[in-house]
Length: 255
Image 1 (tube, rainbow, N blue to C red):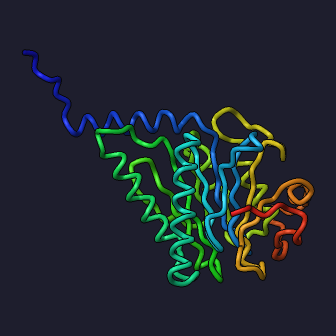
Image 2: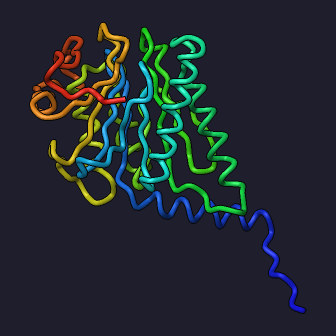
Image 3: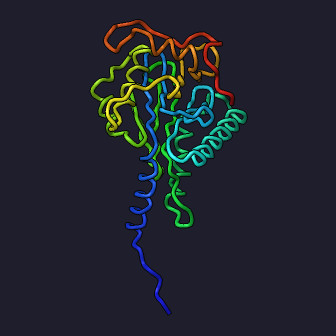
């Protein structure tokens, strides 16, 4: 009778982490930045059908990199949980912190289970507050770890290079065109050499605290995105607050 092959728990966890990291590293990056009137989420995404950035609830957005079917299942679970919480109690009881804790439990349980492979995903859960100090940005990794980010955050295959670029150039309180331009420049410095990204290579959305509607999420597409990309604002221009173009110039997310 042959003895079963023994692998220590430490080696099992290392192998599972290496597996998840290797596959996540194949994806393009996602950047989240606070600007003067909210939070902008920017992803390099050439697909018009498969979204990396989505709305979860009134003030809450979701972004992900990695295996699409896995993070789409997590997104749907978050939408259902938020809807149930808001319906059973109050819409104000639905928070990014609670959703981040939910995702952390799911990812951590899957990662530590030997019966199934770890999820090959990283996530952002963001919530816009009444002021910049109230904004929340949570980054979750494949093993259920949660990081509370401030100002900006990056995930994806070249997160170290993009994050280093942002760390040297990010300034709090930038107008939206400047923040968007900085995000594009950072995504172009991902280790493949400086690249210029066009509007059709991007997926962009904002959580705009200046909107009067309960739903603060808006996708930026078409002419609205083109105008922001061509705006003359730069991080050091001192331009005043810039909000998202009025309704009808971008397509709101369907929930």
